Figure 1 (spheres, rainbow, N blue to C red):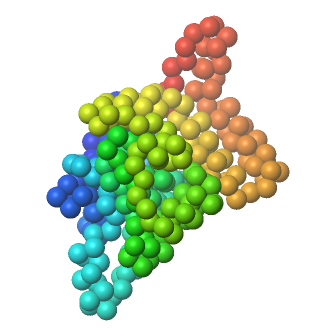
Figure 2: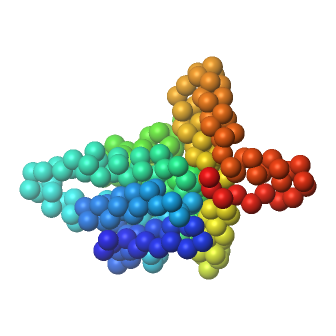
Figure 3: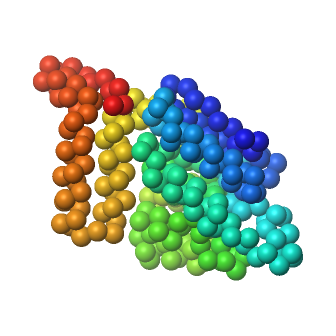
Length: 260
């Protein structure tokens, strides 16, 4: 991987978009590297949480427009990048059986904002800024923004953000519920890592089940949600983490989760 940094420590896989000179905008190579990193994290038994961030002053400025313009001039249009690259990346985040934290250190625009929205939790620097960007260049949203954003802020506010394409700062993002916390820029790395480590020390199977339940419930009836919850509870009840946590509760001790 050339445009993405990947490391594992304390059961946290840290994935860093590493094109700071281009505000971490996404070329074909960067998208390929990002998907490879996400796949590695999903498959690694030693990884129990993922931290996604960007190098330099941006989280991710979305599609690299220089590469995109070359495709347009050559008559290739989008070159099927949405189905080939963006959709698999978003599925890799949302379907991963581990919690994913976005540390939004700066600008998150277009598909870059969509990457953050797809994560389970978002913590932002006070220098962060979200811009949907798509209509600004005559495009519809991609990378799941039409699905994730309205679930974060509601359909009316999502329509406003997507149609008007007006940037919002970190404070406004916190007010709208796009991020769960805003911290000074110099504290972001430590705060986001602490959150990821906390999740990595938790009940991994229960987190995976919770993600599955939330994703399914977004498009299901109450009865369907109840049935899935029952199935997921049955599965989690068979884990060692549940048994040990129950014993710890009865002994008035703090549970130690092993992720299995």
